[in-house]
Image (cartoon, rainbow over all chains, first blue to last red; front, top):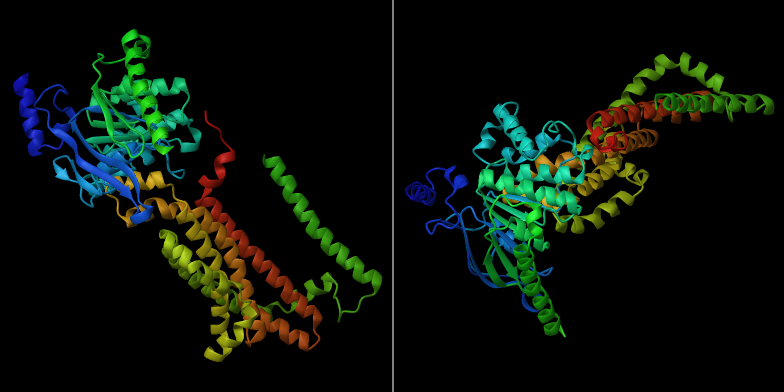
Length: 300
Length: 258
């Protein structure tokens, strides 16, 4: 077993097999390669007197296949970290390394999902989900040939995994908010990204739909094992989904606490009411309350 | 739903008929002279009798309209795309465009005549210059309102600006584009006729000018009817195309999630 995982990690490091990252090495294995590394990275928007620091100097390492939840008061730079990793924002100082390469002015082909599902209204759900395949190689060059066969099957297989079997040929306006968000997850995963970046994907949903989608996301993660970075305001969500939780301070953000969550998987919603889980939630909550008071004192 | 639709159409047709009947009655009862306001029946008879003479002029007006319209659409799409993609270009170019579009096009026709002589060319140019503006504005607005999140999702995948424009921006602007086509085609028509009226020896506009200087008032009105008919026809054609292509934008009301 250790031999297999070691070999896997080695292959992943050499990037010889694009698919090997999906299975990934166990999170706890010391040999797990680093998927995301921020070293001394900071981000400031604007210049001179108008400069707004969005992210204070931050270092963060995320292993391949980890599920990291970022929590913190609003406006603390959580989304900035996501945008750094995806290559949408360049660090003002420091270095961001993703998948062994420095994030230069080049997108990383990661899967992203936001609170707003942004499905294109003129396309069926199936075709919406296939949109990344139209853009990312090696799928792009085969898109015309395979869109009616292999790619469509791929989209429908994902839809089935999130419980939307048979909804592929509906239009976005025929689906509820929760369904659209499931489709959004499918779109983020269709091109088999090594990394999934989620920015409060369930923020606009009601409590019950949200809990349902936690389980779905967990299943997807167990099935595909991408590295996930989830930005959320919901502490229960962070503790339910994360294998690691990073708590951030108020703006300009930095990481206050970084802890591992060891509840066994698959986790259930019922588990979120057990004493250990509640205790973790309270610990996280205390961090954020402190960060908020510190920030308001600093501002005063 | 279809019932309501038919009833609506019946009412519209009834109103048109009522309009002509009222006009006819008004002329008969007041003993109005042909030279001031001919009866609609007279106008239709003239239209029917003079149709062989009118036909080449109709074709001329249609041709100048359509050439001007197509060129205007081309120019409008390109300008709209350039302006819509960049916020800076949008803000920079907008005042100039508004300034240009607020010039009454009648005032421009003499300049075109000065440059190109009277006839077809100024008519085409007038049609073009009057119809491109609504297209520019609509394309630019459609592009400028693309959701930033979706743009981020695609950029994170390594999509180029062109990829985003092609897959998201342009399809998004289609409802705006076709809505503006309906307006633009009517404008182009107005522009072409305007120019013909001022400076041409062909086209419906010219027929009406000639007829009015000969006091052939029924023919003037026949020209007017032709213009109205053509205008409606063009509008209807583009409405149908719009409905076919961008049904997704207006279908929302018919079906709710199941």
